[in-house]
Amino acid sequence: MSFTFNGVAQIIVYFLLLLLITKPLGLYLTAVFSGRRTWLSPVLRPVERVLYKVSGVDEHKEQDWKIYAVAMLSFTAATVLLLYAIERLQDVLPLNPADMGKVDPLLAFNTAVSFSTNTNWQNYAGETTMSYLTQMAGLAFHNFASAAVGVALAVAVIRGLTRRSGRALGNFWVDLTRCFLYILLPICFVYALFLVWQGAPQNFNAYTHVMGIQGFAQTIAQGPVASQEAIKLFGTNGGGFFNANSAHPFENPTPFSNLVEMLSIFALGAALIYMFGKMAGNTKQGWALFGAVSVLFLLSAFVALGAEQAGNPAFARLGVNQTATEWSLAQPGGNMEGKELRFGIASSTLFATITTDASCGAINSWHDSYTPIGGMAPLVNIGLGEVVFGGVGSGLYGLIVFAILAVFIAGLMVGRTPEYLGKKIEQYEMKMAALAILILPLSILGFSALGVVLKPGVTAIANPGPHGLSEVLYAFTSMTGNNGSAFAGLGTTTIGTASFAFYNWTGAFAMLIGRFAFVVPVMALAGSLVRKKVAPVGPGTFPTATPLFSGLLIGVIVIVGALTFFPAYALGPIVEHLLMLAGKSF
Image (cartoon, rainbow, N blue to C red):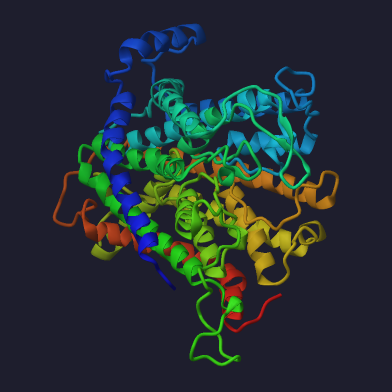
């Protein structure tokens, strides 16, 4: 491990800025989802009423967990079909200045599932595959929709824990509408203007054909980039307008935009944790969760930074007192392979940590080019369930599942029925929590096993040895975890090949499992908890608003992740790291 002052300072400054915006945004979210008046209400409340009237929604009629979940699933199914239709018809639809053809049926299906599940896995290059209309009405719209669905689900789960008793978790259509109107649209409108100011294009111009300085013809893609970039990051979606994603100067023009983009990825996740404490009537409950995920975030950020700044000893240079046979453990300048020169190692590793802690998947460097330990850090982040601040909603309700598991363990230790926020955690709740936790590794490890034993999966691997295993493992971890970032190195984009079919089919099902097979048990858990009355605090009640609980929660998250995935990591990045230290490569 190696650290520079600049790298450490960037992590610290970023975390302090995140702390500054967490409470104000969390208070605003609490007001919105509690139905209270906000400073935008004079403008948006009349619009909200009209939307309810036109759609026939009674905003005062709440739903139990089953109706809430069915409404969510129905809405998502409709958005999948809508995006699929737009992709397949884009050759006859307007706003297609580059004359893009219709998207391949299998790729269109994978992409529709990807963007509707907030995964944004991309088996294509956006600037050469999608028209402006598909980018806007298809992909950008689904960035808003999937983000709003995730936030709505998190709010419903919070109500299940914090309401005294009852059966309802709220109204899905009301929560969805309010997230669209009061949160995502106004913030992303201002955010897009900021990106335009920084240099991101926002136009409908045709691609520009120029002659490069080396005498080669070059096509410069452009389009409505800023508006999609804003929701891509704030909604923790991650799908880029360009193939280079946030390493592209049109998506991420300056170091200042890079900082704001990193802040925006964590903004909603951090604010939702604070909102949890406010709606529970005790902000310490929220800060206890915030403290736990902050430790995990900082640990991952420093591991990734230290590994990349230390570099690869295969690029050793002779020191003053070294012989030609001795290795230096430091690569001069650190590992810059795959990094954007404008941002360097520190901003690249920090971005990689943030985007994989949250279910975002945007990248400003290529994780495939990281050192084994540097690349393992984002892999572990996703494998933990992306509960470290997490995505828009998905991180919080995943974190709550781990918190329930932690209080159950604590209850066993003190010999008392476990309670969380005064709600007793009994057999049914533990079954649902265990089911939700076990679904993700079943998908990740199951599909990864197929990828390394079946010919279509193996032939797509570009790098032999343990790094190839890491590529497959990262792919299915990312898709199941609804992250969408890629380790790269997999040849999955050549239409018509067996590998193309294998990874598009298995990837689509992994994304569906990661989103819905996980959230349905969580909603059942919330539906059970909302019916429970709050038990009085007794001498045997384990306090859940203390640093002790934060430490227990960290331990549960790490132990569950380690026990589940450590054997796979040992065969991939860990053994690759040991071979790297021995000077061996494949």
